[in-house]
Length: 251
Image 1: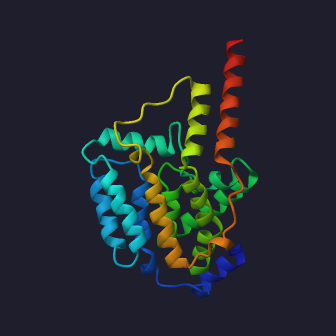
Image 2: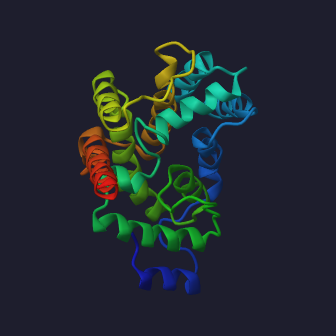
Image 3: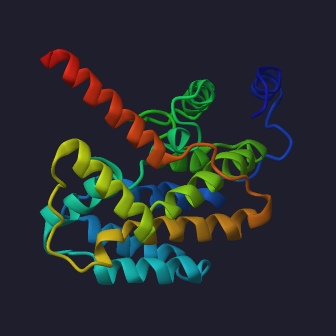
């Protein structure tokens, strides 16, 4: 990320070199809605996003059309359960991008500090979530005037995190997580009555976003570094810590 001196210079002397018209990135503010807790209007929002990307991003549109086919649009509770199973309670992955990459390593703390500053710069309201929450980061890159900063966030943080998140939806990874959850919690939260493919429909949303990144930022897969944190291993560690704390309390 640009250092403080460069940021101060930009505020006094105009845009940093590499700045561009933010209007070219406003679609990311709309795409952020894909990863918010769904309400009754969620199917309408997905259709709006699909229409927005259909001409310029056909691969992303195809993924979102498939998501719409699988989405239990008439059942708000089912949509919400799918979201929770994907990103929150007994989750497949997490939407906290820094945690995906770094776990509880100090590097995540540094990332959160940098991101918080940039959110304040563009007056982006992070609501009740942390600065590295995916919807907040998407709104940040949709609002920030510094193109060089945005490109760095995408190539160094968002793209590798998305690849790791998409990988967590593989059948093998999901089975391992379910076995871990069942071992530590004795039960698995019920899956809503949807098809097996629908259970992982948020993978389509993540793939759609990555397809947009690939086209906007000319990502080269070989140059994108692998995630440094194993989400499944982190879950196991958290479960073990919680299990030991419970045993100590009961003892």
